[in-house]
Length: 147
Image 1: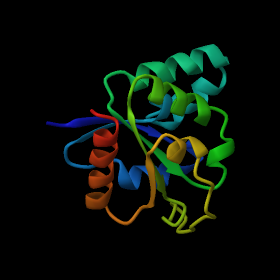
Image 2: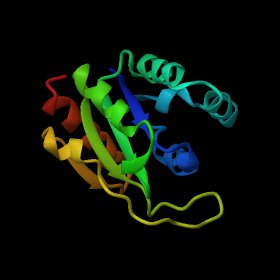
Image 3: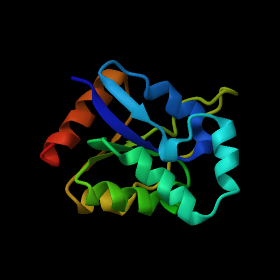
Image 4: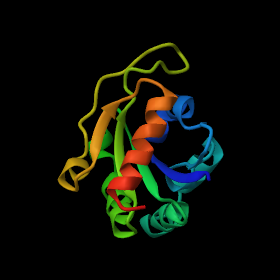
């Protein structure tokens, strides 16, 4: 059975996120449904209410939220909302540091702080190594949430 996963991330790092979210048995939904640059640009013109609705819609039918951690994650505008809504619906949470992955220019970035809600709610954080490990962490988060 495929697991539906919500990927929470800063769209500025979509190149890094795309390296990890296409996995067998994982149906990934992007943060607030931002699948490409045109959706991201259009969303920036909408108000908070509309963006929160997009996040709510993207979280539907998911059982785990993967918080992709890069520099600035803990201060990203909608990170707390995405985590709070994930917890409200009973999703498992896992934080995955991806700052060390190369972007399209070949650069890596600085580490970001893990959002405090991850460990406060009994979930874990990891540094991304490979897709097999990520699949295990997703299943572990689902089990911790009873999903």
